Image (cartoon, rainbow over all chains, first blue to last red; front, top):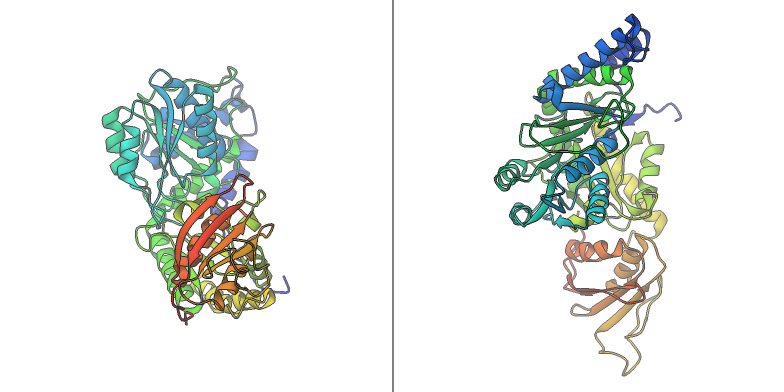
Length: 383
Length: 102
């Protein structure tokens, strides 16, 4: 690191742990180490902490406690949502309608249940800004044989918000349950109540990794999909310290939501403006206004994303990328591809709360030179 | 049409009688992003407006990146086809050069 201060601008899905969440985690290791299913005093204490965490999370999400299930991860919450709701709705149909830019966990789960039930995954396209075609989604969910529809609250790669209100009204009229993946939104913007099933992960809002949340409104039919267990939805349950820390982090994030929104929205606007003006042959993507406060992504022509993220890392900045060369599968981000925007040379920022304006200015200061260096090394400066 | 450029080669007109004189092929098979787009841009630089350039690519990113490049550079994406050999064939029509962004 050579003395350079690290600046983390890649908090999507894994934000730095908030200080009070760390304290709560440590306290729960002391107080809540026991098995919450035991009847002795230690077990009852762990149970009380777990129940309190669930109640606090429910309150912050505008749900009743009994509607909230805690999951071992955001991915597990999404998989369970799709599997259990599709199974519960199997008499209504086997098709699953999804937006094209849903998280991979949703798309894969939709494939899984559609194949199992003899249905189809119906993918609804998005516009260049990443917003799903609401009319097409309404038409798709009104077809016979639809088990469920999934539409994220906002996209974690581009920040673009989705028309969940519009789609929820239509889904309700059609009697089809709507799963809203709010994993990129909870703790950053008010999520509202335009959903029947809601999923999120604590690490994104500054809680610990390894804790997901699934909220299911009363009346949504779902069926356990696996061997029986005390916890019907997430066999084995979750770690009490993770649950407590997640709840405390969510309370802290929501209490600070308006201030964190204003501060980071201004920083992202600054990044969008400076990158577009100062980096040649770049495209800043996603809706410029109707977006998450803290997410921005852009792509630079003729640059490989891995070289760019590595050079930024050396300069002290941790950033993400949706370029193929940065993924294990060597496939580009399905989000960028669905939007029809450049997939190579991609840089993705998700600003953690508390990101400093001077760090963002410094990022914008060094970026044009780093892009020019990478282009120079690749011999493409003249293109 | 037959391949007339490699990743770094200068484009040449196709041999007589093989294709219309305003068609050029960039063979980017086996190259990974962003190399197919670099090869395309390099070929396009010395070709006149109206030229149709077809990129052959095996990199899945090319399906998105060729049309995106055309849009960013003011060219027209005409067609995308995937052959039985799983090779993508993306055709663009070059337009009058767009000045580089400041």
